[in-house]
Image (cartoon, rainbow, N blue to C red; front, side, top):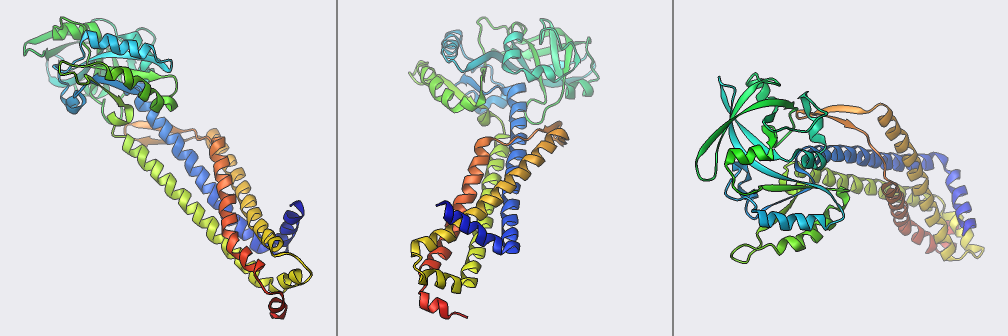
Length: 414
């Protein structure tokens, strides 16, 4: 076997210019694919992390039907205490759940005593929210970042409202809400901090303590509108969803139908469509790389067979078996794919290293994205294996043609 590869390597070196050009083409294809995968993967992780770590969590649990009208923040579709207790039991029993946060969501009128505007409020338990969406604290641009996320009697307001209403930390504001029975209630709050704007939903979201939210709504029971959940690893999201859905389905309403819904972050954020587009573009780049390798290797191998007809005839005339001839040409194609892929991988690692030393920074909506691309070993091995397999497939027809040649006719070829 090694003698076959040695002979194939010597044959490739006899036509150095053609071999180098073909290997270079494969190298460029492999490098382009790996660099795109690394950069796109870094962008995707940064974007998903920004959404899940600062707002949504990895998945959320609501009362069935709540998300259909979530933009209106309905107050009559909350989870009752008994259902909340069962959900908490299911989450505590799941070892991959790192933290969860119960929220009371409501719409309110925000007033600085001179102007009014609308605000979306999230009533939260500060410690639970901090553990579930740790990046929320990082969004605080004004105010105390080291203490509790939010204190009783204080409100975190979005930058959009702070600038528009000319409100700063320490100012007194009024929050007025209408509860589920239609009665109006208002309460003075102190601005405890200003939150940096985010791209997409959440740009008008403010935060108050969950006890203050229940006071404003005059809630008699400890109801919640949603429970946001954070996992130890987002890679386990699909498996955890299947396991947690089983006990959640056992929570029934009066009609004996499921009373809760579990929604992944991708079902709650429009940015999931961008993630899907990135995955689709990655697939197209892979197809292009396969086409590049297939066409280039097949072309060079067909040329090799055509130019070496007399050589093939001589080898056949001295007793070289057709299988041996086929193996030689197959080996040449495999070596081309291997050399090109290895060179492309080396270039990719060098460029990715440079991108981490000098990171790329660009604006995405209201956010600034910093790319720190990485190359997963599984991805590199997958591309290497794909290049070798495609090179072998591209060599099959030329190798079969060489093995089927009539020695007499080949020796007569001019």
